[in-house]
Length: 557
Ligand SMILES: [Zn+2]
Image (tube, rainbow, N blue to C red; front, side, top):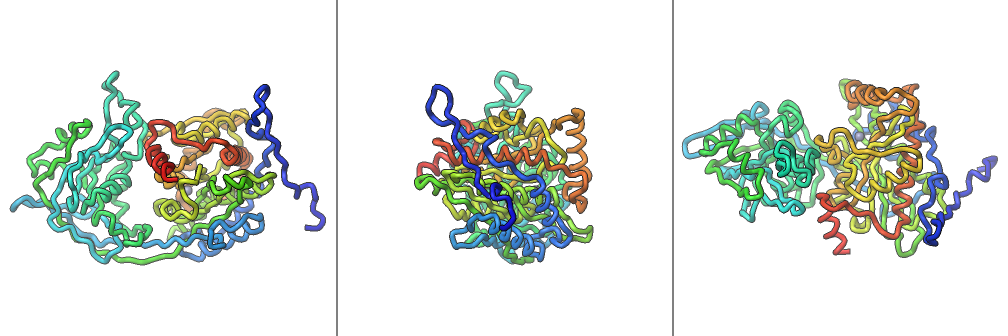
């Protein structure tokens, strides 16, 4: 462009630092990497969260505007189409399934127990079908329903469970510490921290893998972390991906029953809930057939939506390594327009989407380009259950075995610089070490999140990559604000969770300060760049639940 400062157009030439006495080049210093422009991030955020974009719901005019904006920006920045078909998009077919209320019947001979829809049972199907039926399926109690090779744990012991309905406990098996029986064993299922085996999504997945017809989780407020009222919110339409077999690989019926009904069920079968629960915390536990059957018929209303992931890439400069990828993700979607008003989703996650664009721009300024390729994916339908990222993870454009790292951005820091950075699931992989080193160069520290028992690591888009074995980093904003009193961080958090999160009030305000976000993003740029340059690819730490999947994928490379 005429009149533009020519110097600003020149890429930043990088020279690796030669470590003293070693001769081997060390990583490029942070100061040599391009800065992230906070003003540019703010400008994109304002557009994406404007009234015109209608809250960016999948399948609406808001989606069209968002996708067009991102494609236009990626093109202007000079990034290449991320899909191998030469486009910047990956189509994501979604199905919305709304169940009609139905009751669940447990039967043993003439004896019957009727569970009332919503009061006693919340159930649905992920199968794309007008009707699904459990017809006198035999109930089997399977404890926590976990298969965890790294903990030498298998609740199934090879028992054939095809066509059965599995009754499972929520959470990780709470194994006591042999050295201190009043505490949880830190070496088994992460101690106090939740592992993926504790999440309800895992329970339905393993049930499907066992060929079960039904999976019923027993709700208990403590280990679930929320009351049954939260589960009752799942009685309406749920979105999901559609597999080629129309999700027929899933159990026909998935659901939750109350603790009260579970206790009655076990009494009916001549068992005692508390006694079985105790057995379930041991490695010797075996599935217990209950001698009771389950019957339920759910009728569904179906609709389909075609949504899109938006993708751009920067091709790596090393002929041997350019087929390996460092991926950044940020979900573009939010809740759209409802009776309550427009859910603008400015921080969640117009901000992260804006960051993705500016991280991409920063990479184009680095010369020579990184050895490995950089892939930026703005995913859809995160708010509907991480569906866009799941679609990419099960239908990847580039092999996941060659995807060396994933870095997710969801909700930037909009309240000024912090002297720290939170890494959710801190210590999971070598990526945390990269982040700690980069933070140190900024004079900052890193730490894990304050509530590991809530399993936040399993609740954003990076997780779908982790599950497939790709080491994934999930940063969250820091909590110690520079030149602010210590309690300021807690005030910021509380204000977000109680007043703004998932409400129409998540908008850009004049108080927004993206200087802290610019710092966080530069750190994430350094992490991705250094991973793209490194001789050795990042790995999960020993004992991590995703390590076995990664090792198996690498054997197939
Ligand atoms: Zn979000």
